[in-house]
Image 1 (tube, rainbow, N blue to C red):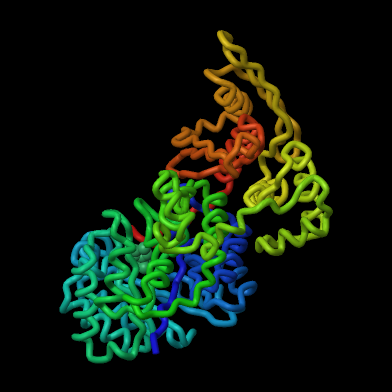
Image 2: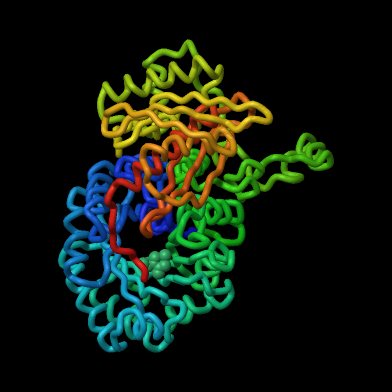
Length: 512
Ligand code: KIV
Ligand code: ZN
């Protein structure tokens, strides 16, 4: 009987730690629903003690999600652990994930603690957590760069205190597959009570090996939980990508001999949702979810696939949700069809009034664009005028003039806390003029660190999706806007980023 590999998704915690990827409470809930639909075993919903916003996000998700275990991260101290337990109260099944750094570098330079103090704090924290929750995960942060003898002492101690999952992070993405796999195996062999816990891998992608390292931790080390994120979202080069690890284990079941409970047909929708919400665009050649992942451009490949699909395809596109990429609605679709599609996409709008607002926007879009795809609907409901989030700034209208040989000029109307204002400017191009027109009024002083445009569904009829990343006073935020007119999409994205800069989401970082 093959055993099961537990999929622990940390898109909403470690993924969200990526600069600019911060999500609102409602966005997190929407993604959590999609993760539940994917049948993810554990959802790490946030780091409850890091901010009130994160606490509420964990609490909401704990109440709404029934099928997955809901987990909150917490540092190894009583206050954080109690806060995690409090946020998780409504969960059907809850997990507290507590961590403390164990590498010599982190203990000495970051924590300024001796190894004995770290060992004692680990013991106390797991003991305290175990009184509040039956399901306790412990992570020695920077575990892979820790001293083996010391790590064995810490992990043996926390298992004895009742930790049920032991997660071994390669926090800085330094590992290579064979060595990481052996590292996990050695830990399991040397720790006398290692069989009392599930072993888990958590790899960062700094050297591009997060998926390979995680799989080696499973195959060589015997780990039975992988921590990962949708699209590999995460700080720096990101985390292990859920879709890659899941499809590797499924496609090479002959080699891994493990079952995964993921309903892979929802992978693409999850990838699109995370990308649209965060503004982190998926590269076209990304395995499984990239636009080219199943596209056969060369004549030889096309010919082969037409004759026998498995000549060049090792997975079926529809198994990861590509066939769902179909026209879903159009101009003649009614409110009920729209509402049902929202439900199928996992979008829960708060009230009938919100559905009406979204439906009016859908009708507006359908007047300008004949085929409406799932991606269009997801972009439409991410619009802040539908979700009512951070509505300090909201787009109203834009006119601009550009002609070869002339400097473009833009005039924009938007609302500031519900009151209409007007801005005007010229610029290098129509987008530049439009964003400067916003700044002429707002004067945020924010620096733009990224501007990107992407066609949501391929053709020139598609909506343009614009991501704007702004930096101000040490905060980095992404704003996303979609519209068939890319200049309007740019203005919406800019206003959305300004809205996020406004929200005072100061929080404690999990690492550092
Ligand atoms: O990478 C890491 O070490 C982490 C821990 C907090 C689990 O994310
Ligand atoms: Zn991490």
